[in-house]
Image 1: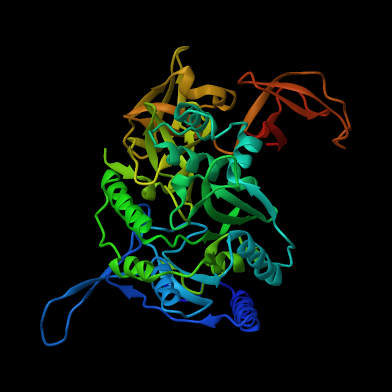
Image 2: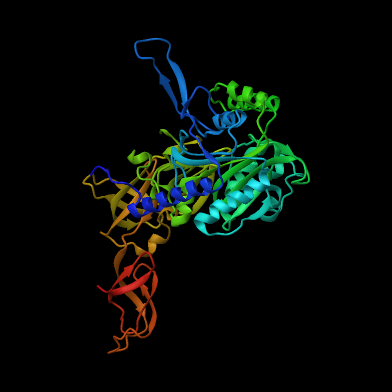
Length: 319
Length: 188
């Protein structure tokens, strides 16, 4: 039989619609502007571990075709809107990540992304808590630094230890035999040994500066300068990732170039750098914090679902 | 054999791991929003039966294992090997050593059909049917009239296996035994 039916029960889709209506109210009450940015763009997010889908724009009647990328998140054009003076903005959109399929991943998924002017990451963590609590009724999250979690769960001081110590722990706890760089070992240990134990809402902040992505590096959150980045975990599942946003255009360009080099090291095709974002930052991005939240996973938590297919009408295998 | 990448690690796939043939039981894709993707894989070593968890980078690959399950009838043992014959009409015979037979020696009976796992053409595991019927060779005398199943006693079967049986069972009785739990099910 052809599996034409939705993988999610209709009751789950109704709950999903209610949650999305609640999200709309949440931002309307706070006077945050809903925006739309392109799904197809000339540049792609530089993250070396993301694989964007590529598509061809072919002018009807002939002419030069153009490669466009389906966005993996709307952060670059949303920041251009902020630089253009939009004020606080939010967006709920479908984003696309090639190759990602599993119990918590579908190659296209719904992302809620919002930016708050004048907020730092700590203030935004409070607002993320409010939004998540409005859906799950789970209260305020625990706040803990990335390094403190490694000390708590693995008994290791990540500021002081050698790469070899992380490798030893990775081999011991995850039976992983390959080679990784320092961030690779940290990621392995975090995702295998720490994340599954973060059952109560936990806001992890002060990430290593090497994992800053688009966050600024700050002093004061930890013993050493750290990325002003946070992630929310509930029931052992990563739900949101936020930054006190980097506004320094020159630093942004350096990170793009470093991402390009990493892509090369990992043997991945180079992607065009988003010069428009760099220009927008040169013009001036207002001080702000931003966060992206996985809406499908939020619905999973609300419904106590163990597989993303239970909250999406037609996942990859039925698309 | 072909190579299989982590995204092809479906339950049931047989691969080589540390020189031993293994069956994939579970494969979980683990990818943080930022960072390297991994696959957390649960495998059963087909030689030892042991289950292990192993983590791979997504995109790593393993060589497939030449493993096949075949139905075979048990013939006899010469003390060193246990001999089986394929039931597919080929009459092919295979000798399984002690390591391959393992605890299944408790449940071997002539003419009963077992599943033999072949690795590169040689038996590495023998799986019994869920139930076998075996004769009691040693037990305390039966208690006449006690069919309540209230108590039990050990009984030694023709294969050497010892199972707990109700008090009324006698030497010479043929019992149906669940090979997964070594539990007495009933008189055959």
